[in-house]
Structure formats: C-alpha cells, structure tokens
Length: 253
Image (tube, rainbow, N blue to C red; front, side, top):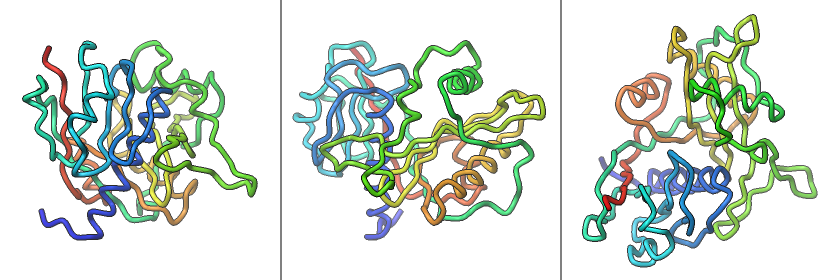
C-alpha cells in the first residue's frame, strides 16, 4: 500500500482516536507524544499501550507498562515495532479503516438510538457480550465533556479526555437490543468499534444502523476504526477503505 500524506494523517487520527477510547474505558494511564500507556493491567480485550507514531521508542513504551502482568499487550498502530526481543509475540493483525462523512444509502430495519443511563448501558453490554454485563463499559463513558461554549471538548495528547462517546443500539419492536456499536469522537473523526449483532440479526444491519445514527450525531465527520477477517470485509462493503495495517502484540511470558 502506498502511504500518501493524507493517508498518514488519517492513520495518525485513527490511532489517537483508538487510544482515547482505550484510555476512557480503562480509566487509567497517560499520553505522551508517542503513545498512550497504562502502568497497571488493563481490562480484558484492552491493550496496555497504543502507539501514536511510527517512531515510538520501544524501551520507553515498555517501561510504561507492567510487562510482568498476565497477557500484557501493545497495540502497534503502524505495524512498525519488533517486540519479539522483549518477549512479545503477535496476537493478531488488522487494518485501519476510514469512511468519508455521510449516511449509507440503505435504511436500517431496527429502531436505532443512543444509549442513555446506566441501566441501558448494562443492557447494551449484555447484548454485546452475550452474557450478563460485567461492567466493562462504566457509566462514566456516557458523560461527554463540554467547554464553556457547550461544544464537546477533547483534551490534547497529554490529557486523554474521553471527549464525546456514544453507545448505539438497534432495537426491535419489543425494545430488545439486537445490534449495536460504540462510537467516540476526537477532533475531526469518529471512531466506530465493538460492532455487534445478535444471532439471527444480519451483520449488515449493525453497520447500516450504526453508520446512519453516527451521521446524525456527528454530521460532516469522517469515520475510522479497525477490523480484520470477515468483519473487515463487511466494513469495506459499507463504504470503508483500508488505510494501513496494525498489530497487537502480547507478552508470551
């Protein structure tokens, strides 16, 4: 893949957006110009560090996390690091994706809305996980920050503010959550993650509904995220373009 200046800008924006999401979920860690990292073990599914540049200093990065913790992991946002000498191995690879602003042409079949309140968030997580909510997604994620003008505020790279976060849910006529996604805005992009659909609900419904609602919540903003395998194919079918690889490393000790 040829990386153009515009693509590089999108990659940097996608990496920072994902790091901000991880920081918000984990409620820990801090930002430098090169990475977000948490000195304490992070929740299941979440990395202990996310790189923000291609030239992240490996020694400084690893010094900021607990490599002795079980399953310590690093999201190598540019697939540029070699962490094998430090005892890590590649857990999986994926592709960053980008979609220009705008709703999809197709209309969702479910009724889509933004989650509001802890009880709804618990129901969303249960639908996402397929089991009883474990509280991974804490109620603090439902509270965006606003500046004195009423606009959503996002701190700089040394702040790690969660900015504007929304949990998107598609419900049937009985109010059951059958599909959903998480979304977070940083700067001029909105990250889409945790896209899911219940058994019997087409994957296309989750993407169509989430993209439609995201376009309503943040009109004019492009979407970013990352996917792999069949999920990547589904995202590409819904107007995303793959813009560059990433890797997740896990400590093998």
